[in-house]
Amino acid sequence: MPERLSARGLTGAAGGPFGIALGRGDAMAITGPSGAGKSVLLRMIADLDPHEGAILLDGVDRATIAAPLWRRRVAYLAAEPGWWHDDTAPHFPDRPRTEALMPSLALDPGLLNQPVHRLSTGERMRLAFIRTLLNEPEILLLDEPTGALDPHATALVETLLIERLRAGAALILVTHDMAQASRLGARRFHLEAGTLTPR
Ligand SMILES: Nc1ncnc2c1ncn2[C@@H]1O[C@H](COP(=O)(O)OP(=O)(O)OP(=O)(O)O)[C@@H](O)[C@H]1O
Image (cartoon, rainbow, N blue to C red; front, side, top):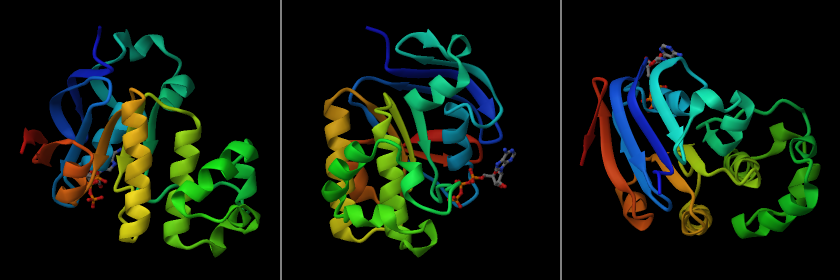
């Protein structure tokens, strides 16, 4: 069976060439100093930033998959996710599935009736995480997904991530929390000076 995600000769603003191979249920945690290019590397994999090299999803070359479909299947969640409506609800057209997921992240479904600017940073982060999960991507590229969360909310996010991994997704996350990497069973890598080194 081909790797869930594989990248060869991946080169761009984050450095490289990078080689990445993740199977079903595999997780990889990336650390590195501020400005090292961790976000850019995730964005290159999501095809949001320019890059050279080959990336394959389940053995299928990215070049043969339309960009919007690729980004749904290989989903990038930014450390500060974007919101394009003033209100929260229009970001979640599938309201029943959204409301079903919210309690598992300790979010009151009533938050969907709030303008985005009234939500706390942690509420926005968890809602953006739900937005990402609703597309059921095969690859999750998460940029400090629990950076703004307390330990309880962090544990809830990790529970959902472990569920996704068990369902066969693969995960690359930027985190400075080594205990989190262990809890997720993630292989650890360090990005510095354009080079990704196992830790
Ligand atoms: N599209 C781009 N092209 C070229 N350089 C970029 C691009 N996007 C960001 N950069 C630069 O690349 C460097 C790495 O940025 P990046 O956001 O990936 O760092 P990071 O490791 O995620 O840092 P932090 O931990 O502070 O979030 C920065 O100097 C940034 O200004």
